[in-house]
Image 1 (cartoon, rainbow, N blue to C red):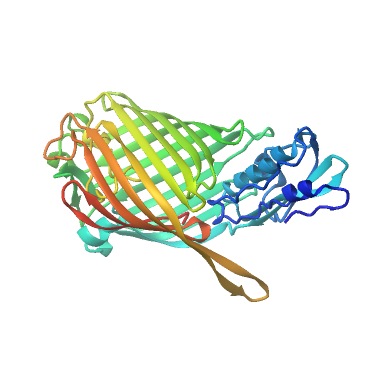
Image 2 (spheres, rainbow, N blue to C red):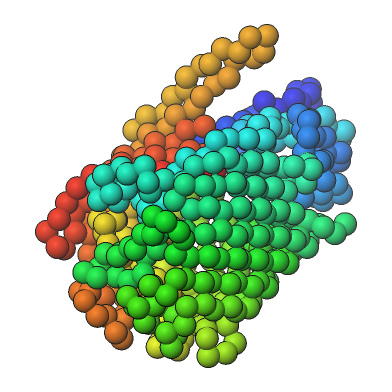
Length: 479
């Protein structure tokens, strides 16, 4: 809440200042209606005095101030100041460092106003067991692979967010099972005093007993070696990042990869690598730009986001690929609890003649169309358009008592939605696959559940143009 002295201020001024920015992380998606500030003089300017920060037990004060769009000495009208408070709260929530943020007016000294920023930090350290199917989605593992434990990776992982208080991230994976792998990464958002430049390191190495060596009938075909390994890999990358303001982040990366497969793979698919090779080593250089101007990044209901990625993999005959990917998202509120979301994605790979290793396009990672979870579509160019109409159905919390401490509120929000997808992938050599080089369509209804620490469960019943329908499960989590 605002903490202000009420004497000698007009009723209109008090009403405007009582707009609180106390929404929690899960409430952030539905903004409160604006207060009536029509009776307040527009010409009056208020000067920002001291900005006080409280509740940051680990997060550095400089990291918090970096996200606040006002500075000591700035002057704003009251209407602009109220908007700045909400912008600051929203931006601090989007750092994912806090589960609650309050930005409010503090003490008044004439026309000088102090600002109070009160945050409640999340838990940052997660040493966790690792258990995850290797298939592209839960449906493929449950239905097509019959929940086979042989297709599960297990081990341990360490997630350490805000490791030094600078919003940096440390990741360490030790994995065995389907894949034997060790991975480590460190992402430091700022390394300079001006808080504009950052640095990221990543390293992974491992081996697989099974490998997707071809696509037939738009489904992955695997080879498994029970006595040994069919793939060995090493990937390294260093990224330099630049964030001049708040909404946009640029990064330039340099990396090196080594991929080796058994001769059996080459015999089954001579085009897996170029010219029947069984090993390739190549450098990579990439540029990436991300832009976020949304109310809540993990589940945006209002605002815009965009991503551009341009990469060059390889410089000689063994591997030569230019790749460009573009992704944009827009969300608009139609009412306080109803919003529309549109996502567009497009990509191209040059030259068009590529080995199988470089042909993955649709159905891998987060590049997929609902209703085609059991399929992959390989190719060198294409994209899709997704449109969703969503309404919040329930918003409640479960109180979890903690001995000797304030009880913890577990927020839960449930959304109902209807959606439609359209997409196309071009493949100059489709082989025994029929989903490329044609328009694809799908539609469906679903339920999204958003809960603590940005864990999102999606239950979707989709229909595709092949006459197929079914229930599909998706999960998104920081863990």
